[in-house]
Amino acid sequence: MALDEYTQGVLSKLGVDSQGASGFVTPALLAYLRGVGMTLSSAEDRRASARNNVELDFQRNASDTQRRFQEGRRNLTGSLVGRGILRSGEANRRFTEDDADRSRAMNDVDASRASRLTAVDQAFRDVQDSLRQNTTERLLAAEQEEANRRAVEDAQRRQQDSMRQYYEGLYR
Image 1: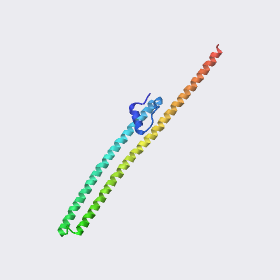
Image 2: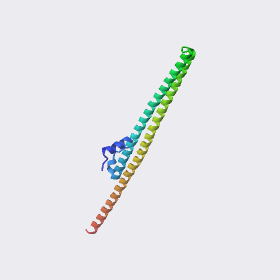
Image 3: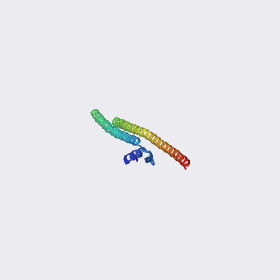
Image 4: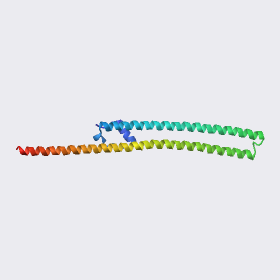
């Protein structure tokens, strides 16, 4: 039994070398590898969904932050106009502080987005690494089982040949 294209694709995604694996593929191993493929596909879907949610949250937070600071700027401007000091040093200082606060808030939103995306990607890599390790171990075990089976068959064949030669020698 040989590895099909889907299974080879799964092994390739995991970075597992499948060269020579067709010599010892059993139905159980093939079923296991298909299960790994489904698990990997599910993890990819969860990763894409989580990344999408992070991006939506980022857009919402950035929009809320911008809106909050625009309202604050309007209130500040109204207050300064009401006091008649719109073109004073105090106005410049307050606008500068407001801009700095907005920049810090946007940096916090960006940092939160980056941190969450990193966590999502790391969780996916952890799943991928676990699947890679388990798959490699399973392939090595299957290869070892096949080597053991062949060794037993060879030993049995040699023993049968030896017995056949012995009995042929008795009847000649």
